Image (tube, rainbow, N blue to C red; front, side, top):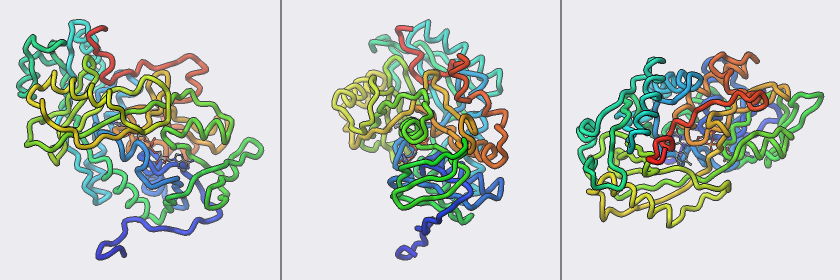
Length: 406
Ligand SMILES: Cc1cc2nc3c(=O)[nH]c(=O)nc-3n(C[C@H](O)[C@H](O)[C@H](O)COP(=O)(O)OP(=O)(O)OC[C@H]3O[C@@H](n4cnc5c(N)ncnc54)[C@H](O)[C@@H]3O)c2cc1C
């Protein structure tokens, strides 16, 4: 017990062997653990987290979920992901605060609108609700938008995706951890994976700061640290660059932004939290690094970009800023693989800035992969081998494509 509240997950003793070990108590690690128990009855599992659960991108993201990705490989995964939030809310008995308020992505040039047309067509073809809207409809959706010719990049229209929105990121971490603990799984916080043993091409043990664990099965879902772990502890190179993403929130306001908005032209996205703050972020820092510091120039950029789009936000104060790591692949799609090149070694990383929205559904399929050894069809396009075979995906579907310079 913790005061009058019951702890949602405990502090178990580290065992010397588990059927599987998961590196990283982030979104993907916890979701995979949960589905290993829930769908496959495998509960002798340890989630090893070097700090506290949600320490990585899981607790730092801006909570945006949507399914309007660009490619036929990615769209089905994200579509199923959106549908899973209400189901998980029920089965975890934990309010994940899914708010399907819709996402509006703004275009600031004819060229950007053309690119959006293609994007919308691919989404619609695969049954994802997404449509083009003109500036007038943008204004109806978000009355505080300035659709005049005043801004440096006037609004030409947008791509509206009604089923997207936000989910409370901490709640997902806590809900999944609660679910894992209910199945008797072990979550070891403040425990760092420091070594991995391979014999005859198979995973056999994992060394941690708290002791050695024997296991035949290991999932690397360490977010920004996945590539480092894979290369330095196993010699398996992953084509991942790590970049910082910054985000911030303003002081709270009465409700005025009823949809998630994003603009590639201004490199900004924003939504209003249930507390009333405007949560906003943008693209990544342009150079690889592992820092989680925020920078003054970035904060200034966010203020300028937000007030160009919504002048009524002028004079509003930012209350808090933070940063996290994005593990980016060359084609902006994740690496999900297993048993190649090492038997028992599974990888789920390279999510960049898309890894929150996809986490629960990916956990479901990675769990199936680990439980059966068979890669589910939906995950097959994401193999590490695709880079060797020059089968890169064109998944740069966030805000960046719609800059007025395109
Ligand atoms: C500012 C920001 C905004 C974002 N906004 C969005 C968004 O709106 N929507 C969206 O879909 N995505 C967003 N993302 C991306 C998303 O947060 C990540 O893609 C996601 O968190 C990746 O999940 P993960 O489980 O792979 O990694 P993480 O959540 O980072 O978890 C990895 C965990 O591994 C642990 N770890 C690392 N090394 C070790 C070790 N040696 N031993 C033990 N544990 C270890 C870390 O401590 C960490 O807790 C954003 C990210 C940031 C930083």
